[in-house]
Amino acid sequence: MSFDLQVKNIRYDGIFPVHIDWSPCGKYLALGFDNGVVQLITPEGESVWRLVEPHDDKVRRVTFSPDGSKLISTSVDKYFCIWDTSDGEEIEEFELNEPILYPVWSPDGTKILVDGPDCRPQIRDAESFEVEYEGVEHYEHNTAVAWGPNDIIASGSFDNFVHLIDLKEKEYLYSLTCFKEEIVHLCPLKRDQFFLVTGVADGQLTLHDIDTGMELMNKKAHEGRINDIKSTLDGRAFATAGADNTVRIYSSDLLTEFLSFPYFQNEVCSIAFSPDGKFLATASIFEGLSIWEVGAWYPDGF
Image 1: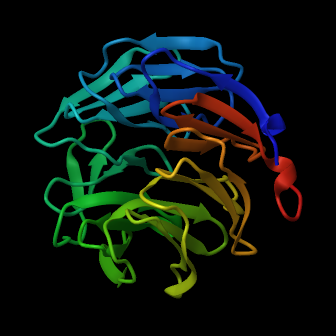
Image 2: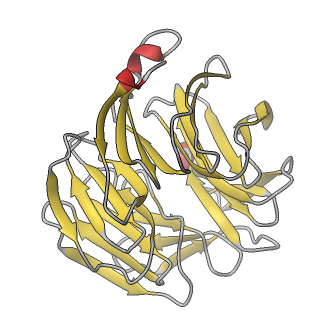
Image 3: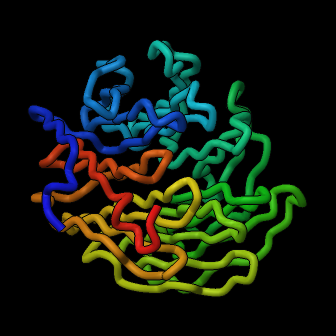
């Protein structure tokens, strides 16, 4: 593989994007920076809008709503903001006692699943931000959450457990217990079955069939922390970004890695697939934002 796969690169002077997300329509990328800036750009690199002071500290996540009309930004400054993607105007701002670092929209965009401050996940109303439901309590702080098919939610923690809850029945299902360090990322794959990818602080990567509890993959993906995990919309592929300066892409059908990017000079903070799965955006401390054409490398075509 060569740098020919890179179709775009934007470097930033003195700052870098910490987290990125690709809009459902494919027309925009959201970027959250280490200095608190939030920006919306086109895949060609044209700025749509840029918020210079939305946060007083590093942005942790930016996340489009399912219809692409809203954007969440969270920060270590303890502010949770929702923006109108059409013009960058603020819709809601909530100041919290503790920062929320892992927001996930419900499939219909009316709820937001977050890492709760009391060692348990919370579901909040997307407009009022009132807590509507709290999940199973962890022994330590809740660090990652996922909203899977059929309203099954997952929560990971410093306690090295992943809890699964049937939201419709408000019922605890079971826990995944095969991890040696804290859970840092959870990524549901939108397949016929509920597959859940889990990333761990020591670089461990697992894939589970949540319907059966069966472990399908368990491997050392990175030397050090996994910084991000994202999947294609159809769940056929997922990618990981690591503190070891690499990005890896896996097939959930073949349960194997089929593409890697060992080109980065510093750690890769975040990744995002285009809606059609043909492109992957990467955010790196040194290289800034890059877009790579990856569709042709899928094992069975795309």
